[in-house]
Every structure is written in C-alpha cells, then in structure tokens.
Length: 626
Image (tube, rainbow, N blue to C red; front, side, top):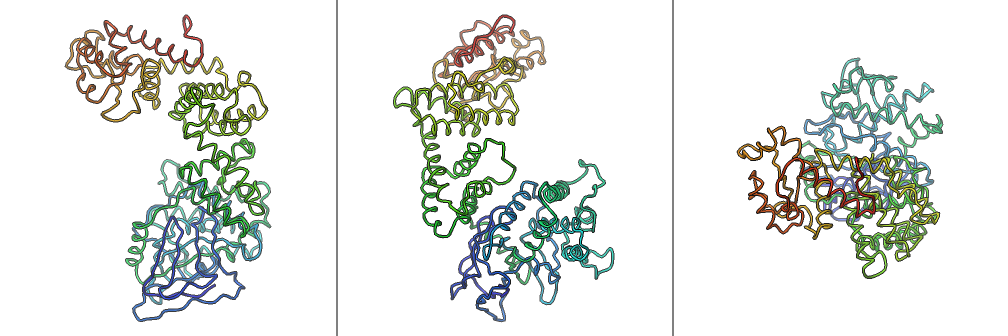
C-alpha cells in the first residue's frame, strides 16, 4: 500500500472532477494499487486500496536520473505525520467549500465506516505536491480545499476529545510543537496570508474551535466566512444527537487508518501546474448524475454491478443527465415526503433507505426504471389518452415548466404510478396543478412553503382523494388576493415570469408567439420610461416620473419582434398604434384597438388581461372593488 511509483512519462491520465486513472507505460497497474478515486465530499470511491495490514505487490519503480514525478498511496495518518509541511501557492484560489460540501463529506464518511473488511475504506482522491529534494516543505498545487477541511475536522475532533493522549495525537496532525511559538512553520498547513490569522486563532490553536472570530461577519472575507461556517458545521454534526464520544474516536481512527490519498509529488510547482492545466483542458467534468451512479452502483454487491449498470444506462438513454440526478430527488420526495429528508446528498439517502448494499437491483427495477419511463413520457408529451386530451395535457405541462422547473414533477410521477397516465381524472389533475403552480408563482409564495405544499399533495394522491376534493390544489382567498395584487403591481414587467405571462396571454388571445428570443420576441413598453424627445407622452403623463409610475404595468406591455421594437422607439401613441396594428403578435394588435393610451387605458387593459388569465384558470373574474 505504501509503495512509490516512479515514472518519466505516463500513457494515460484521465481526470474528471477528481477521478483519475494512471497506468504505467509498459505494464498494467498491479491489483490493489491504482483505481478510480473520488474527491472528498463528492462521492464514495470505488477504489481498491489495500488495508494497512494487507500484503500488496508494489508497483514497478522507474528510477532514471531525469525522473520528475512520484506517486504514492498513503493513509491520512502517514500524510500528516510530519513528512510534509504544506503551503499554498499564490496561484491557489480562495477557500471555497461551503457547509453543504462538508455535510456531504461527513455523510460519506459515516457510510464508509459502516462497511466491513476490505471495503471499510474511503479514497480522498489525488493531491498534487511540489517538493524540492530533501525538504519537508511542499507546495500544494491541487488538494487545497480538501486539506483545509480535513485540518478543521481533525482540529474539532481534537477539541472534543476528553482523553489527553488522544487529543495530543490529533493536535500533532495540525501543529508541530517542536517549532517555537509564533513560527508559522509549526503548522502542518500554511494557508494564504489573508485568512491565515483567523484560521490559526479559530481552528489550528488548541481549544479554540468553538471560539467567536471576534470580527463582525460583514468584515470577513468570503474565504474567512467559509472557514467559520464549515468549522461550525463540523462541530454541529459531531455534537448532534446520537453522535457519541465513541463514534468520534472511531471516526478519528478511520480517518487516520482507512482514508487514503494518492500523493503525486513533482520536482517543482511549474510541472505540477502544467499537469493540472492539461487535465483541466482535456477532461470532461462528471455530472451530478455520474457521481450518483458511481456511489449507488459501488454500494451494491459485486455480482449486481453489471446488470445494475445496464439498467442505469437504459435510463440514461431516455433522459438527459440533469433529469437522471433530479429523478433521484423526485424518488426521495415520493418515498419520504420530506418528513425524513435531510441536507445529506440524495444518493447517500437512496443507498441507506433502499438497502442498496444488500439488493440494489430491487431499487433499480422497482423504482428507478419505472419512474424514468414515466418522466420520459412527461417530457415527450405522452401523458393522457391519445388525441385532444394528450395535446391539452402536454400544453399544461409546458405552461408549468415555464415557471417551475422541478417541484411539480413528483406529483405527476406519483399520479401516473397510482392513477395511471390515462386515468379518467388525469387531465383535470394536471390542469389544476398548472393553475396552482402559476398562481403561487405570481403570488410570490415562498419556495419552501410551495415545496411543502407539493409534498403534502402527494398524500392526497396516494389516498385516492378525487381531484375536486384535493385541498392542496384549491386556490384559497389569500392566494388569489396576493396574485391579483402582483398582477396589478407597477413593476410587473420587471418580474422574472413577465415574459412567460405575456406569452401565455398571447396564446389565450390568439396565437403562440414562441419563446422569448432576442430580435425575435421582445417586450415592448408602449408608454416609454424615458419619454424625452416626445412631447405627446409628457403632455399625457405630466413628467418623466409620471411615466415611470405606469410603464412597467401589465396593461402597458406587449410582445413585438426585435425589428418592430426598434421602429416604435419612443414614438407617440398614434405612430406606435399603426405599427402595433400590423404586428404578427396578437397582444400588440389587441392594444392597437385602443383610441388613446392614458393611465386609465393602462389600468383598464390590466384588469382585462387579469380577467383573461383568471377565466383560463376557472377562477371567478375580478369583483367590484377587488
């Protein structure tokens, strides 16, 4: 396990978001030495790394005078035993990990610790180091984010340890007290100059991982905020209910003995940056779906890998990569309704809750593949009975997807599973879902509240509640009031959904103008914001400020082609009206029927468009005084 591998040239170096494979030029890498390795916090490795007490054939050593690189697989305990003193190059980016990355790392470590035998290990990926011969000082070319985070993890474990001897062992992973106080060389890791003082007094110094930084958060740099946030995240998770001192000690031992890195050492930093640059320029990054696949399949029994990979690939062939990863999130939502969800990576929860380690094929065949086919039908417009019903449902799904990319999908997936894609109430359900998504989006409902509502809707679907009796699909009075208030707001045209709203109103009034595209479909403000150069507008609205009060209102905007938009400019209403009347866009032609364009015209037209939308939703029109 601790053998070194020297070579002058390499035949293949595949890099993809932390995974790589190195093969010697003249021989196959020996079993148990080289394998795929995953970046810490991104996935659990499928690497075959020998345990400390396992006898492994060492790789062949090439030792020519001009060799410039060595590679060695080693556990963290060996990496941090004093053989290296790490410093960051000035080219390194700032520390950028966030608590979600740290939570993923800790979740993956917990999972890896539950395994037994030779599988009880965790591969932390590759570190690229530049080291002069005979020196313990190394420049950390690649691996900065991981090593800073691991230092924080060891420091928190040290401060939570009640056994003095164990605490001292952990402390020596962070700091070498052989050096004099105040000498920066005493730290195993020396980070960038700007965040280094805060890192020292809140992480590296003994007993200070629960200390306040002593500076207002707004005065901290982004890297410093990340250090504090991630340190606090580690403490919180290691002190969470059910996390005992025994577990923390087991975690520390696991990190030192069973967590391995591949330390690649080059003679100088320029070679390291050149190699790293080559990797970055020639590799294709793993998607979230690729990482999830690696984790889920590697957790399965070995005899299930091949059939499981075939099933996964059958899903990949009918879905895009983003949908593959999202599908796992949808399956989690459908299965646990949010009551037991956490911030942990979805693939980790899938592995644990579906018993992937014992029978992963069951999850693949009973959940992943059927739901993938249902999602494919949703994307391809194959929901509902063939004919007009299917076309209408496809239109409603398109409407929903304009303003909400994902939250509604679990509801339709579960409906298709339980009620069938061609069930008698399918069209009614999706029409009501379309109305709900749009009304909540227009009303500005908090995304968390909307997500909870969608998850609760799953209970109604599973219980067989008729569509008309599903309370979560109903538009309550407050939701209606909030939506109408926003539709009348003086800045409606500035809202992110304004273009989609105008497109939907255009369809209701005659024809689909198509997606918003520069030079093809643009938003025209009939009353311009800055009317300078046109006396007619200033005469009608009194001043530029008077124009600003109305120019973003729903009744003042239409869709035009880019060419038409340039033609109308800040022309007077009579000149604009002639151009709008000839437009191919229905909303523009509709506006051209107005004789004048006053504030009253804009208000009246706003109410008319709101009523048009409410009618399409089967919602009562605006009432008197509403």
